[in-house]
Image 1 (spheres, rainbow, N blue to C red):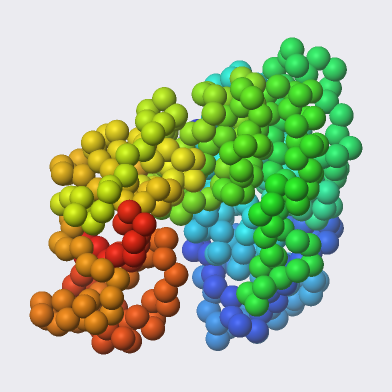
Image 2: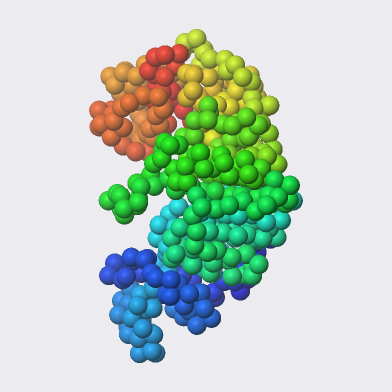
Length: 438
């Protein structure tokens, strides 16, 4: 079965659903290069395709059957681990995951396929013929580039990860991944004139340091990425068509002159800031890209946002409608796009909540009807809820520090949909807005 995704991205899919592994299965996900090469071979792909739906009670039998068929124990473990990772990867990659290989860390750090497609689109629209992916991970961005007929020369410092990326690039024979360091990469002669581009996704995690769930700890300071920001800038100078994926905490004052910093969100979750140089920059300065399932992407630039964002003078200026600005716009300091579109005012500078007299449909802000505005006082709020016989609430907060579970106990309410309580600041004061999602 063949799946065709955005940007012409095509992948071969197995006919069987991806199985779930039991608690006792091999979950390490760390394999050697030889195992990766076997997994990407016709024999390895056939084993992965034939595993079928996983029945936890039959786990021992599946392993025994594979071993009885002559498969070495380490390859059995590798195949089962890939099935587990493919199951997890469906959340990021959909059906495309069924034809890919993964490492555990690589999957966690990989770019979602629809975001990678947006990255690749910039290179294709700029007529880039060859892109150097310097730190490719498992190759999700490299695959998106190759799917748009951009030849990819990818490198990664880790041999296993590079082998996984190379296997994932198998449908595009002209694109390959190998072992290499971005710091050692030398731009080809004439890169500034020819149709050559560079893509970087610097490491933003502390190697060997993991949380309770096994995820490696992230770093947020620009000084802590690898390769360094200085190295990134030097590559962008040598190759004008350069893009780099960074943390959403990217500081505005570090944006080079003439470049574009675009903050990207998906389903309301802020995921990244991408800095685009040279012909890959569509606008100078800051922009936001908002992705919502089933909807076309929305891009907002400084040109569509007022520089001076008006704010309310007090709680008496809270109007019947409230707009929760998408976090990509908030981080890009583009809340002025919402105030301009609604003729509204922000409740508190930088929080992204805009109040207005009129209801508008905006793809980059969620709209609520305001039922009431109250001081952030437990006794008064409890009395208000009791008077209206409201026993189930949803609590949202931004700009205030407060224990939500403790507040629920004090209010003597349970989680529910009877009312939404927004705990925030209005003109410098803590307040509660009682909302209905429109």
